[in-house]
Length: 77
Image 1 (tube, rainbow, N blue to C red):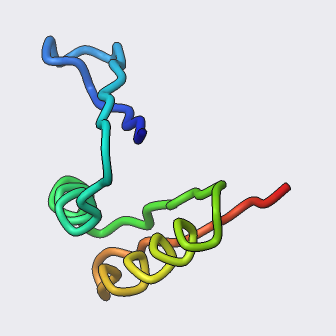
Image 2 (image 1 turned 120 degrees about the vertical axis):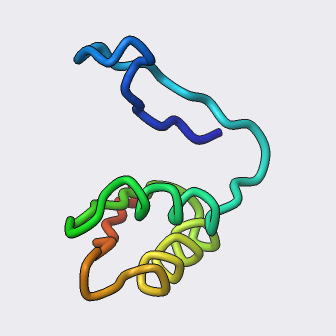
């Protein structure tokens, strides 16, 4: 399950949590983040099995551009 923090529809500073069940469509998710965060550095944090973190690391590199950098971080314990 992926949790994504998003702004509420009322346009104020309240945050809501959007839940996505099933296998994530990383291309769609990263493209949406890129569309709404131009000229930024976006942190991607992962804690999970190696195939999951490898996939996130790879898509972070693939989707980074000169205008937008996805910086990957992982934690294992």
